[in-house]
Image (cartoon, rainbow, N blue to C red; front, side, top):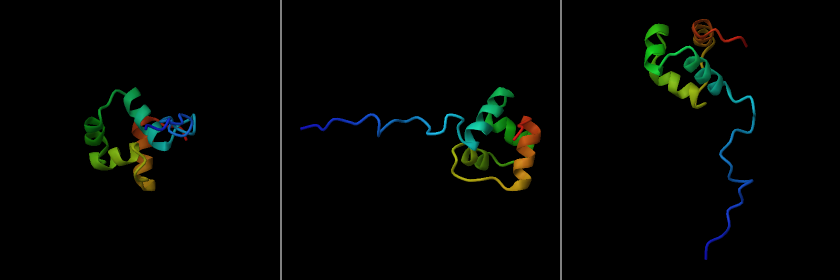
Length: 76
């Protein structure tokens, strides 16, 4: 017997309509026309860390955040 799925509990959308910091970084990078690899090369930030930040698995250091903001022109 299969149990019904409560869609209000199992939604896959973000709870915050503005998104997370990772969403902001990813959106700004894509708007600037960079792949993660390209952005890694021009910014000097390892691609591994960019991926972790965009997936909200880690938080960047202050110096790296300043680099991301400068290259992607993020106003926060």
